[in-house]
Image (cartoon, rainbow, N blue to C red; front, top):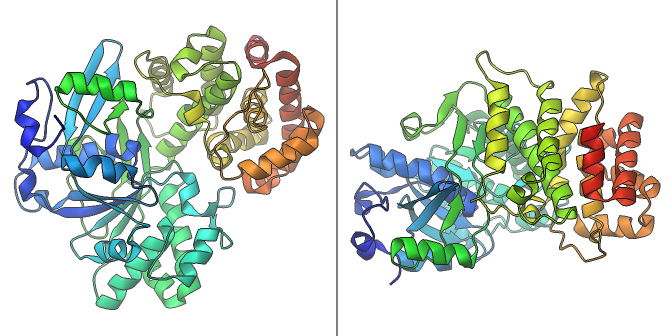
Length: 493
């Protein structure tokens, strides 16, 4: 039996299900990037918002999800009325809930004009995004639109049939402007530095390539709130699907696995209204930057350090890696070193936050693969590691711990592990990085400068003598000692 609206009553009573009549819900949000994270995070919040109210304004905040490329999620969810299960796993057990906030889904590349039309509908007041860092067609180091990106070039030559997230947003806003329809809010939920400001810059730069007047209209009327999102969401495996089927007594083609913890901090700037996010636990603030930096430099940076060095050491998951006391200390040290670069609002308990992160990383029920976290490192390093390194250098503080994490990335992108086995490197710059690695060979004094010279990742910071020295030394230890011993040496220093 397949999960679907007609079968909800057949599930065990312990399974939480939508506490509202889905037939009364209409769309108010289009979400670009219908992946697991959105379905475990923002869609759950909207599900709670819909459950909390009963009037027409509440019921008009359903979600239409758009996969920009792959039809897999649509094909899995459409036969089950777009219902799916969120399984929150902890050491003490798993809590299951069926989420109903997703009303429909589309595949952008199949009918791009239809998605633009949907986004231009006056009923849509928020367009949110989780397209990962690489989905914004920008240069991470500068935050500017990459005008030479293949999708940007395509979209400028196919205005009504875009491929990229910026292309769809600009096409829909252009349509609304021509029709005299008020603009929507663009709500970025990806781990970008100053994500709302960054997406605003990317979108207005893209729009300016079409029309300066359009770009100015977007700058004047569209709001781009900054946000901070936090929930660990591993990829779903067939074993996960089997476990969920056993719990529900029916099959869910694409459930999402996650942890009990969830956090969403949002600047309260919405051009066309919003659901009652605060009632669903969202922190509405005037400035999200301190919280964003806190997460990027404490959670995401230590996560990346564990991913690259843990993978090289042979650990499959973050929880496995955390069982090694030296790696657990590495994560803690990465956070401690970054904490001195943060200026938080009064009352923020950074030691408690760091302790909660270490506990979450060690959650044995959460099978978050090091390989998965290691994806797209060229896009992630500037926000997660390099900013803190730059700030520590400005304070004349050592950067050895962060340098080891960067060196771990360098060793990883050579695409060959410590046993000589091929690493499946998933990164927009994978080919370029692999070519540099082949030319330099497994010699730290050649490889580190070659990769530090990739300005798309390191910018001018790659030429900083103290950073070059620290990263080269760390990479040399990785080649000489291996990841396990290099981590132990660093933590014992």
